[in-house]
Length: 123
Image (cartoon, rainbow, N blue to C red; front, side, top):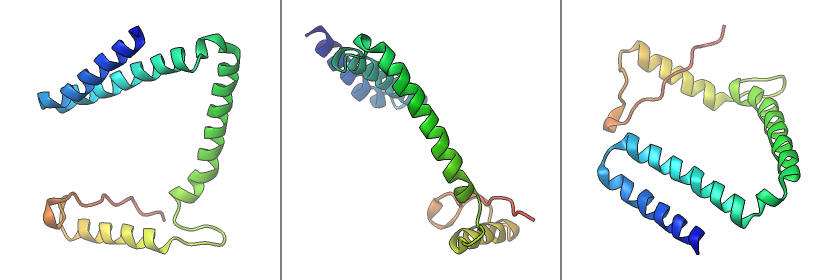
């Protein structure tokens, strides 16, 4: 019952936070409360405090797998061409951004939305 009351109180604070209208306070309280809620749920409802050894193994395994995924995917995501493939759409988007910057269109596109920033061209 105590955990439920704490979670309910945190819910009320996280819902009331945006009514202050201060973006930084809203973000800090939202992420702070989310971390506290995740900790409480993991500790009391997932029984992580009873299985510390396995949690360490799972955490290390997860971090290693995330590193492998980022290492395997990032070369494809960060480049516009490879040995047997070419990302034509990404190249055209970069060219449009560079042309817009050279033409002096600046930081805003039509409709008041921010224009995408162009990545520097590789030579």
